[in-house]
Length: 322
Image 1 (cartoon, rainbow, N blue to C red):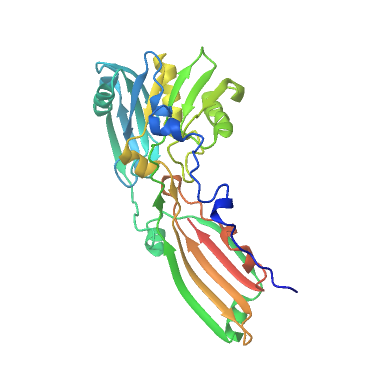
Image 2: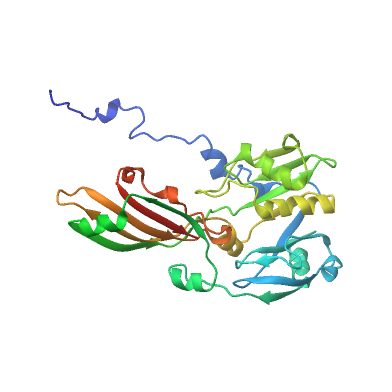
């Protein structure tokens, strides 16, 4: 078979490589004309702020919003996790407040009185034994094939290793958030920072008791997503609930601290893996136990995350814990 020769064309003959290319949305973004969710400012728009849990794990004992509702400028208060609800992550939304100004909304948040019953928690995601002892884990699956123990004894080569990577925050330049405005009692218009315009309408509709066809989602520009911004999320629903209660449009954009805590992470993953091979180097055993966390969402570690190229190994044992 003749050798195939590949060569670049002369630079002057290239139409794209080496040329300046203007992005379709570049001028709008660079000039400040691009409108993001936080730029939507309908007449009478209120500003929302969140009361979030600060701790490891607890049960809400009592919550009193009376003073918040009487705070000057406050137009609506919505409780997400009331008495009896368990909160298991620093940053979990407890309540939301909408007011005429951001400062008044913050005053309203500070006026909410909450008491908690502290529960055991665990913060070292690498320490599976400690997390299990603290009862912060759950089995996510177990799958075995062949005779792992016997194959290990018969193997010519055996290697065991521990591997892992921590969670990573997406750090979108534009935080998560939305601007919600109702049209009558059963139609909702949402300007949402999202990568999933077509899929989030139903996520708003279900919890709000609406038909998905009555929820309009608009996102002309997004300031980064990186694997997040695919859902309505609790803060999106909080924005819609506050708008409904107040009878006015509401803007709710997460502050940077809350963005870091609850607005999407790449899950962590840790694993103890043993592999074995015969004298010819054929892999005969895969034995692994992996675990991790997805932050506030819990764990999304799954058995299916074993690379497909290992499916032909005759003796396999896989276990996952979240």
